[in-house]
Image (cartoon, rainbow, N blue to C red; front, side, top):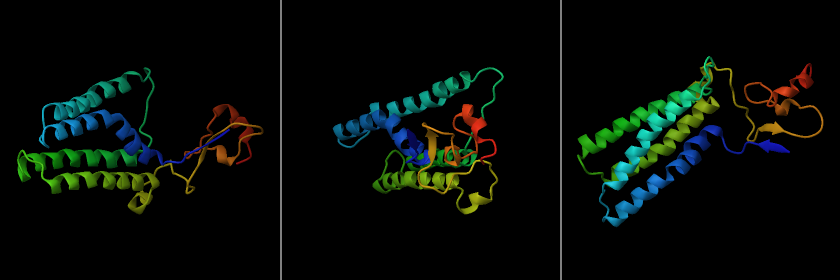
Length: 185
């Protein structure tokens, strides 16, 4: 049995995982806006703010709490983290500008469309950071993605693992088979 990565991890986390976890809030907001003659009610914004507050406080608190005492965890893809953090700050600033400065209390069509198109731009920037393209190739990091489209990340079967059974950071996927690789790399 062989497992092959089809999606880039960064792109899938920013698109599929985000859409899947936010789909209920998005659907509630769309239903409410359509039901109220395209004006915002109380349910949509409250649901989104409540979900964001839950994500910011409860989920982050649980992530910190479950790390065992004395163990240290690091962010594996620091470049992607910085890109998404910068886009988050930009998103909150942009939201403040369009709701309070540019057109107070009203979201115009061009603001909605521009905000919508910021998302694919954010995903592209994160992908560029993940793949170390443009100026990111000059930033040192020991984790580097391979050039192949699909990368084997797990392998089961007969015989010792090969170079294809090694993750991007150079570590063997299954640590109990490291002894087979002595001298083969």
